[in-house]
View 1: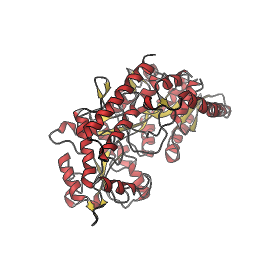
View 2: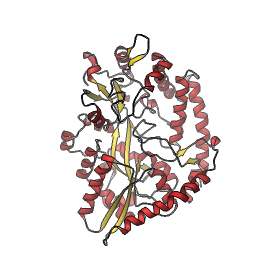
View 3: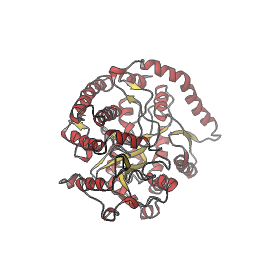
View 4: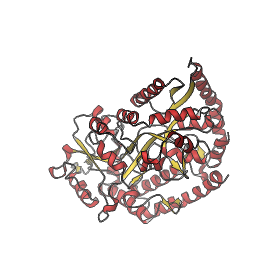
Length: 479
């Protein structure tokens, strides 16, 4: 299990609570990549965890793939495809798989919905019996590539005629690493601000009239938020720690989590961003805010704070329109880019990327046939059908007018334009990406509890990340 040994040496945990999509988003409850925890905190040897899971689960994974092959019942080459999706998302991709299988008579793709797909893909790859295709997230490219768990697709893409120019640049950057192509996209997303039109004063209640700068936005938040007579929150215009991609606010202020090839979370831009986030806890009151948010329901339910009218503005991706239609179609909404920092129009167009991908694990039995299926998914009509069914924008640079005209999200052009923005950001380019999110989130928790000043909290997070990044480089990158 060489791959798992490398990750084990780097401090990888088999279990993770990270949610998909981009820098530390609050998003759908899906499986996630191995999580690089603080090495100082390891209590149980990773080898014990790996062996325990492998003993119980690996045989089942092998058996599943063999069963799929036996059931083919034809002379076709069977390509095993593992995907994380369930429900409508799963069925949308099933139609694509069925279309590919009908389109030719040499390859049959066997499509399996796999829970905990990231961990199971690593286990199967380490054991020498991976699926031919794995439906993972773009923020796992670096972790899996550093572990030696992926096939370089550069030559296969060249042979198939797939080039960088066919994709929106921000998404292409998410699937390449160290000059190599490690994945192809499926359904993507970007973040935008959903606004409940009915809860907005007339002067703000359209995309044209909505505040464009951060200072005007702050004025709107003060005006629209409502408190009960006892001082508790009744309606909040906005809360920066609620929604999708809410761990990446430094990018809004011109910062990032990278500086000179190393992790950086306590730059001036970082401090300014998290001071702005913390200002909401101070504005509404720490206890009042905690009490208010504790009453929020599940993301995909009528009790979602935006759908229940407790939050007037909510950051999320294009898929969120489906939850509005399902759980409260009476909400009248529009979507806009998040306002930019005053005096810095060059920072306009800030958005957080989400990208589902297809990868070929190292050691896959049928990489050429697997890539043929992946290339089929990249066809414009196929991709647009999949993205519409999953309520997403397209990752392709060319988009048909029909896609925009018939898309179930009425604001899809906003999300498409944001994906093309130079201020579109995906995961920080480090194998300890998840640890960055955990450390920053913990730091902001301490700020909001009033225990530590923002700068001090971030400096401490930086010290811990410096140690983790140094160990990751030695234990994972150098072997």
